[in-house]
Image (cartoon, rainbow, N blue to C red; front, top):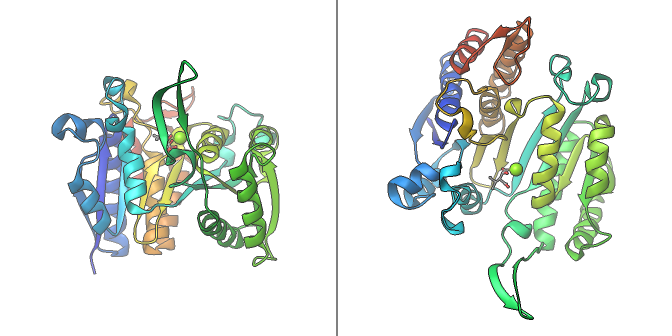
Length: 355
Ligand code: IPM
Ligand code: MG
């Protein structure tokens, strides 16, 4: 049975990086005979410009029917003044909600090769291997909000944070199962000294964890976790947290490895899943052909692993990326004297030749 992949390049460098990842998937298909086909759909600011919506219904319908979705990035300064409900970012949030993508996986693995690019000392980061499991369709991102109202004579705005027990249970179960395939440790991150949602979060996590006695569980407040990620990142195996804290901590964790241009992600739902780099649309370098395609190529590896159970094919891509770095190839975000300079096209060709 052919597997249908919907590709949503989006804005900025989205087109360049998704086409790199598609060529890698096509090469894998030649070798492993998975049988994949690719359909392209619009989202983000470019979709808004051409049809008035950042997330056309046609894109949602195609994504719902897809076996997996490969997503580039959305956004750009030219849409800064578009009204909030039509901003390019609504495309990402709308797709997550429409497809029920409740888990966001953001692995950060600092290899020996990348440790020297880290802003932290190599002895602190080398060997870091963290999987951030972020709840993706609840919390303050999706609660009621008010853009502006007058209260006691002053203008104010508000966003409501809420979490239900079932929402916390399902993300915790996912994190526990993920930990069982790794080092059997889960750190739950909240702000239960202040927030009611965090107190419900913590007691629900503790309840769920009783069914996973082989997994060690600890709890950190989010401010402390932010500090620990910078001071002792190797202590972490799986981190499970809510939508907003996960957004912030995953950007922090992404710099541990030196370049956000290397960091993939998977957003997993019951029916289908979406794969995208952690970085954004980088409007400043769009169209120049110099973006690092590795985050999207590694997202394609996650696609093979999580959507199609093709562990071997996924590992082939990951090894090809590692080998290309080991050979000294560097895109501008990682380039230093003494290395081989690669633009997007060259880096992609090198990865292809290493598969
Ligand atoms: C991310 C991004 C998104 C988020 C934005 C673009 C809405 O920062 O995927 O981390 O906040 O979730
Ligand atoms: Mg973010």
